[in-house]
Image (tube, rainbow, N blue to C red; front, side):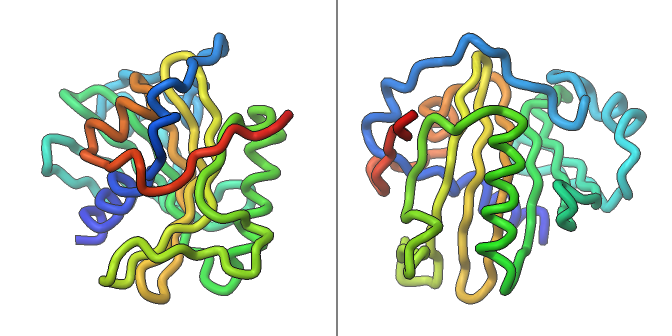
Length: 199
């Protein structure tokens, strides 16, 4: 059930406007996720991943493997998503609680150091007094998000809140642009402004 909730969060987490339809690919290829080659099989991932194994999940046309480890010193759940037994998406799922702003800034700095400045952002600024924007009447809120675009995919740092539970996701998506990803997940592209970050 937890895996289904996490997958629902991931599938619903990118809300951008029509500018997303024109996002260019970078000339840099999408980096591997935890040194695991894209399109690896589940068996290959299980053999190569040395983090603590939690569980697997199948449903909605995908299979996922979950592990537990740290990212930049922060406790995290790690999800590998497979389609037709090929690894297509990796995610770090973090529940920061009261440490949200500290963890979010730390992860943004960590990812920027590794992959350069993000090209785009959406949602409120993390420095705002109010970082949460209401998405619906059922307790779901969206926070700040940042995006790094690559040839063959993208990386996103996304923050969400459901009632009082905050989730920060570092998503690696292989084989699709942001537009294709949102279209495949039936996500509306006009829910939140999507801004180019000035260099």
